[in-house]
Length: 74
Image (cartoon, one colour):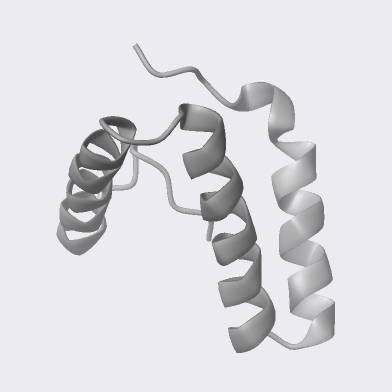
């Protein structure tokens, strides 16, 4: 399952809010592009660490396939 801000698990909602708060602090010192590049590589590294190669390839494909449904922040 890919998590997003619409997931209904209370722990996921809490994690999402904490991560967004952290990002707001980082935006005071770094550009959004710098933050995003670090987030992407860390996310992919997490996936690659905990998944076998077949599942990793599936999740990367799923992320790519959903690229047009990504929304901007307001």
